[in-house]
Length: 123
Image (cartoon, rainbow, N blue to C red; front, top):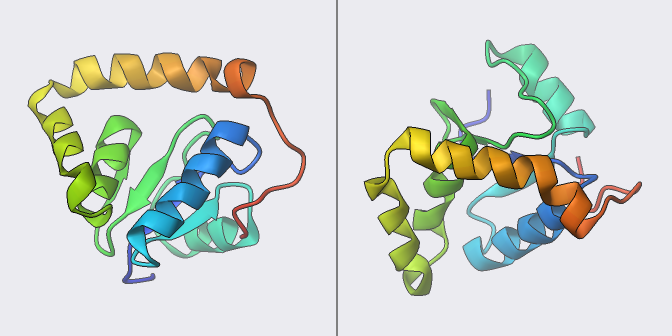
């Protein structure tokens, strides 16, 4: 297993790809961002005991444990730098509430932002 943080996103979703590129830039390489459809993700999930999430989910691996849905998104925040520190306030909301919103966005993201055939996140 890898020891550095990895964020797995849907590489065919335009919103996810753009967000992934932005996270790569903001974290200055502290987090590896990969597409769930890519070879790297395939290899990662085969070698460990981590279940591969559905493509409409996000998974964050911190080197020891994995997080999904809104927990995964919030685990990225400390790597973004001081100007995004306020996003840590998301932790004050109960997981159930955060995940209801997360799932609503996940269900509608391709309708709102579109899909792409080519994955820009690598893999």
